[in-house]
Image (cartoon, rainbow, N blue to C red; front, side, top):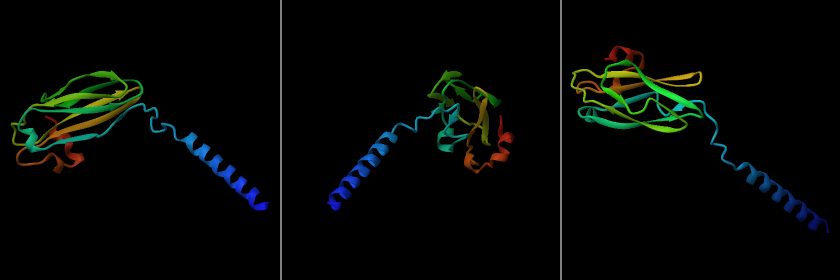
Amino acid sequence: MESSAMKRYLCILICFAAAILAGSCQKGWETEIELGVNNTRINIPWAKAQDTYDFVFPVYSNRSWTIKQVAGGDWLTIGKSKGEGREYIPMQTMPNILSTPRAVRVEVSAGKKTIPVYIVISSESLAATEIEDALLDSYLF
């Protein structure tokens, strides 16, 4: 008889634990985010820097946001300057015909948060990945 009561208790305990676990398996990963990006630096290799290069830049937010170039040359085209929620912004770089890498600084803003992003394009003699973050401002042209 004691064995039967123990089995019932164990069964109730397992069912209770399963109910708690099932209830906690909601989409908790879909949290509200004021503003986020995948990368704060995009390096474009020489193989892609020789021609016009198209890519997308994801922006994640729970509100309206803006994106704009704040420093550097005019070799980057940003396909959209504002939006809302999660979007993939088309961007395009012109070929790097210079003998040195170059960079632009873009700012993505939503609410009171601003995220700076550098887009660095390689030259034949120096890969964008070889430039230290602290030196990026010297390549803004």
